[in-house]
Amino acid sequence: MAGRAPSIACICVIGKQNNPLHISLFPPEKRAPLEFSLLLSSCLDIFEARLPRHTVDQDFGLLQAVDDRLSMYGWLTNTGVKFVVVVDMEGRPATVSESRNSAVVGIRDADLKPAFRALQTAYISLLRNPFYDPDEHSPATANAEQRVGSTQITSRNFIREVKRIGDSWAPGVTNL
Image: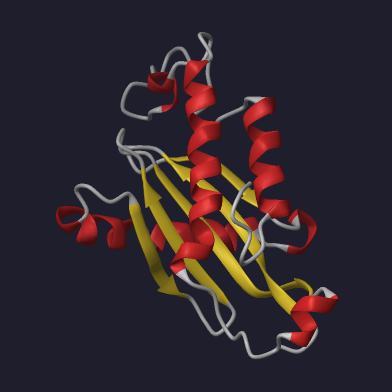
């Protein structure tokens, strides 16, 4: 892993009906969307299994280590919306200071809290938009005859903020 540092590979927002609301890949041209969709689906059972124990704390921590390179971390909002961040341990070239500190072999759950807090802030800003109706994005309430809205979040501001979070996160960053 010399010369490489952890980075976010994927950020996903999953609705309370377990429907994907938003998926961003980092970098998008080097990631397979179908692969990440399957990985994200596999973590839903982990959320369900841990739910009775996590009634107060929103941070679900490490959901699963996919392999020696990819790990999935989860966060649950009080509205039942889930955030999943997939970290690639060799996702980007290491900076000079990261190269000197080659003893770091992993990340802590706490390293992702700033990213999850920033995602939650972005989602709250989205909910404050009077033109955004979260119930329109739920498959349970979607009208089959009137497919006016998509089940995906299409807000450019939200998508831009998720991209900023994914691009700027690194282990040890305390504020996004």
